[in-house]
Picture 1 (cartoon, rainbow, N blue to C red):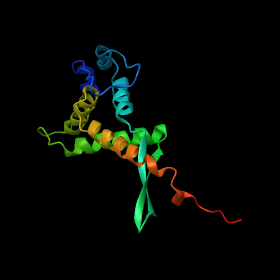
Picture 2: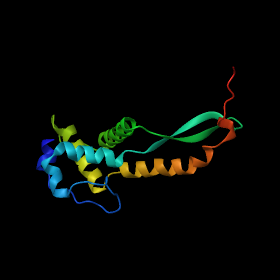
Picture 3: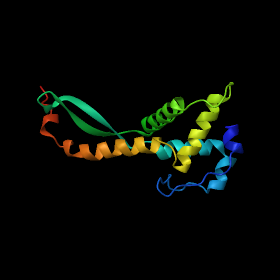
Picture 4: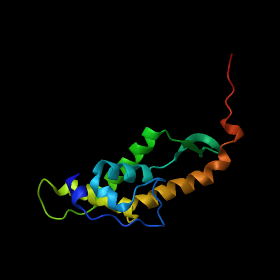
Length: 145
């Protein structure tokens, strides 16, 4: 949090819009918790694609988009940010190495430089393609009474 507080104000990218109502970039270093919240909520996916085994016919899985609750969305975003952070090479040694990399990744997310945005875009694209399966007759399960 101290690294976020002392970092220069981020430069917003018009290609990767943040949440509506985001404060000006100069205000984010003043409130690191808001900084982290904006980064996580902006990159959080709206849905996930669930595979239903055998419903596609011929033993093939049917992909079905499922909306996520707020907590699930945030969990997925944090997981993606941590995955990207773990894959980055270390810059030196010491106990401050990992927190420093996480802070750099949060700044990258807010500025639109992070690969997490591509992951989100990929998930939404797959969900858009799987919309046709929502009204599939194979999903209808007969209830026994």
